[in-house]
Length: 73
Length: 355
Image (tube, rainbow over all chains, first blue to last red):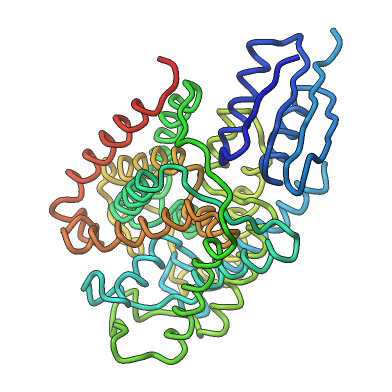
């Protein structure tokens, strides 16, 4: 399980950091801590395009944890 | 196709139609909407530059920011935040404006210029993409401006409040506001119409996250076509509207080619490099001038500082003879573009996490 905290970063940094984690750890589940609605949408869109399954949990207000599971090969 | 993408395409079409028609309703040719030009006119109206032909309080800008403000309140997305290297964002914002005024247009006007037959816009588009690719080079190596923090709501209200103030001045025209008597600053759509179009675009752009630099960036960075679908829809709708409105042809104001285009010059190298500077600096600060206006309305005070950087860049451009005119580049425009490119690359190198 790889954890990435992208709270406070503005677009497109959350996507870049998630993309890098995917590339470095293609078989691992990722949990991404995001802050804004925009970051959540952008990271989710990246995960969808890479065929990851996405589980979304609201931590508080506008903080979300996205659990991204890589596609089974 | 996903609902969001469909909404983005619809928003792009509506924006493209309005962008083209604003010329028929009074705005300068091929300048139905131009965030850089309009901010430059506002900078002139408040007197921080004294170029007499480009001074007018463009209500479209106030509309964009207030439309985004209202939309973010309605959808619960207003978040007061800031503190991610504001001085660097201010500087990059200024360079975006300097580059845009060497080409004569922001990335939106660039698309509108092409849609109005001005092929100099194609050269500029190549430059914009080249600049964005350099920005992506740094993004992939871990470039960022640092995290923003949450702030008290009042911080986020400042930009919308300033826009309300500017809007009041646009309506009541106090004597200290400058107003062009000729030139692009004297060509404008009726104030209420401009405000309504601005609000509508601001609302749509907030909801869709539309961005005319991010669109090109995302193709190369993440192979994502969401943002570009809005830009393409915008462009196609603008061309179609220009033909439908009779703007092309013998009677019209537009023709295809490089020469004699409205508020445009044919110095290809500087059209290319000016827009390269825009592409690079805008990629580093996370979006085009429209996008930063929208974010500044959503409570992002870093974006608000960026918009202030645009205004400062416009003032510098006209005060220091950097801005182009239909005759060609200003005396110091090329030098400023080179300095801007170097500063952006040096700053980005310092903020890159791994070599």
